[in-house]
Amino acid sequence: MSKFTAVLICLLPVLCRPAPVSVDGYAAVVSTNVITASQVMTYIQAEKDRAAATLKGEELAERLRSLYDEGLERLIDKQLILEQYRAQGGQLPDHAVDDRINDIINRRFKGDYGEFQKALFDNGQTIEDFRREIKEDLIISLMRRQEVNETVRVPLDEITKLYESRKEQYTVREQVNLQVIQFKPAPDPAYQPVKEENIRKMHARLKSGDLDFADAARQFSEGFNSADGGVMGWKDASDIRTEILDSVKGLPEGGLGEPLRIGEETFLVRLLGRRPAGLRPLEDVMPELENELFDARARDAFKAWTQRLRHKFPVTVY
Image 1 (cartoon, rainbow, N blue to C red):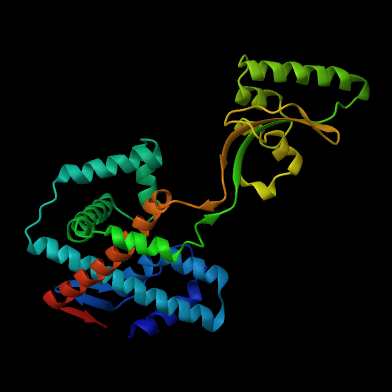
Image 2 (image 1 turned 60 degrees about the vertical axis):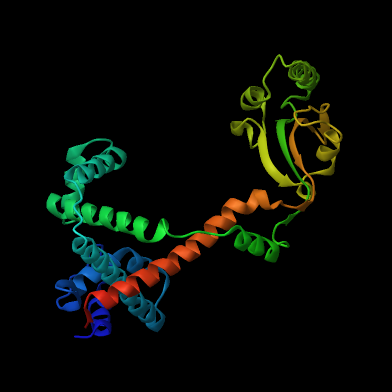
């Protein structure tokens, strides 16, 4: 049975089933390690379900064929790496597996071993299956770190070249970060003078430092960002009302503007920071550029490494 036939026969009728699909037959053999079609189906289950939720007909069938091929390739790579680890005489200590399993139980199941066992049962796994899976994942991570991540270097001139090619992308407009306490009109107009007097008193306390702005915003602000202490976050200046910008014009960072009335609402506005329009410096974007280039180089290095392993160990695809 070809892998495409296995996909079409076994996946299309059962896409809505939550349980993994079981399919007989070899998908590939790496040295003496067999990868079955059912293993591939289980491996791509989550991606398959996502595809079934959004695609139909021939488009879905084509996506399933692609997912099968991609999943099989990843499983072949996995077996090649495990074979290389065994060929090198690698011995992963049992305590490394135990530590990883305990970490999973603590993080995902709040330390409840019974819930962990129940999850394994619901997933059709034994503890031995799970230990083997964890051990293999640890070996893959170890080998990948040694053979790929620790060998990849990103020269500064490549980062600079990528930065120069994206200068338009890193050109930003003027931005401000404001902290705002917003007051709506009193429900009863008779109480509005009292409310305005309280606002003036609060402003004086904020200005003197007797009252923390974030605490006051959380307690008294009637704006949408009160739970965040009134912090609006960095916004383009062009997206903020002119009256609010004018109220903090000329203030230093941390400065508090005078009470601002807009319509029937009153605002107390504090300037947290200002970024002038211009090009973001290389230092600001270097980490993201370096990570992007590192990831690209690591993908290439991983592909080259697994290709070398395919020449070292026999691989048969059915």
